[in-house]
Image (tube, rainbow over all chains, first blue to last red; front, side):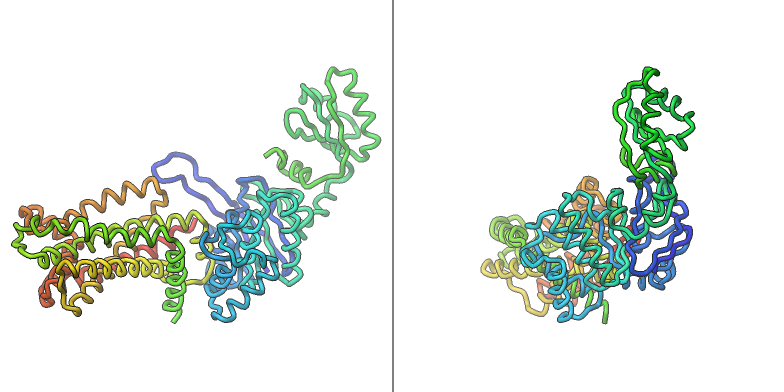
Length: 318
Length: 254
């Protein structure tokens, strides 16, 4: 459904200002199948939103190619616009109109006739459970309600692909869970959904496949489970108070430690075969060394660990 | 065809927004009333040097000037409305749809035109008891000129807004530009009172021509050269401004 090859985009510094050109996206190639929820995971500033906006025809790429639902992005952006829906991070509704009116107008902007547009607006109001407030003015809506309206606006014209930019940013956990249900419902109806996020849980729980992006490049791609299985064994998250580097030195030489990553000043992550047997050995090593051990946690690898091993930085600390 | 349909769609929505904002409507109606009732009665004496002896003549000189000022100011400040929509993400949402880019600018401009024309009608009606008399056909032609003027000013403002995108910079820019434009158009005082060097500069100002054209129409001189010269100038500039605003819109994708 979406194929991109080597997409790139750089932003020159503002006129009259000094500074380097920002290479926001450096050669992104990915492929999204029909009917899947594809996640684009990365820290802020990684190039997720820029890539998304290129695919939604809002920004013209500097290089590379892309095909969306059979339409060439660079040669025929008008056709791409007809088959995609885009929901921006901030949302986009006037204050003084109602959701129903917005939905009808949105449909009509896609060339749908008046009667059909109002019919679709009513269908969307029901499907997204907006009935309670659909006829009040948008300025009276809460954040979560506005977000639901935004997504409804993105799909009222029945696109083949929906682009969601950080759909649950700023939402409380309950609204977030509802949002995930909505996205899954859209997938059930046959839509392909492309989501950008910096939340691990979202990429893990919601997406069929993900690509991890950092500094404009894709560093990993696959299903969340596959990516986590690439890291075999267990993860020991060790918190020390004080000398992290000393602890790292002591532990990295240990035979049972495959790999050691320093997460931040006081946290280390040890990748071991079996966490249960490694814990007592770690305790013994650190006991006589003068390093104060704060806590040890044992868990299965997470997407953060995947990110850490590929880039040397933790996603969580942002 | 698609352009007409899209423009109508955008116009409808924009007009609905005004309709639902009592503040805008109140302000739009208050402006003409203030100027016609509070300022104009002083004109007969003020314009004596122009050879004005009756209120009728005074209003024929004054009302076109007033309408031009409203076209200029309304046009300039239209940019801020657009900027608010940019900030709210509305423009971006429209950009992703197949809606005609020209329709997006033209539909909004037409809303400003309609609002201006409504105010113009109110002003004209209010001036009638004070003695303003204009032949109907000439009046309609004057309104047409006014509408084109508004399209030009509004789209120029949109083009500038889409390039600058910053309220703090836009305000002073608009102020700096609109003041000389208004003064050099002879809106408050006709430029026949001006020294030659000032007149020469004013001839570069399209609003100077349009004000003169409108004054000629209000006086019933349809055949005056200022009328058709101003029509040509204003039509040409309106087309240019529209082209510029649409180009700015397309280029502003970030």
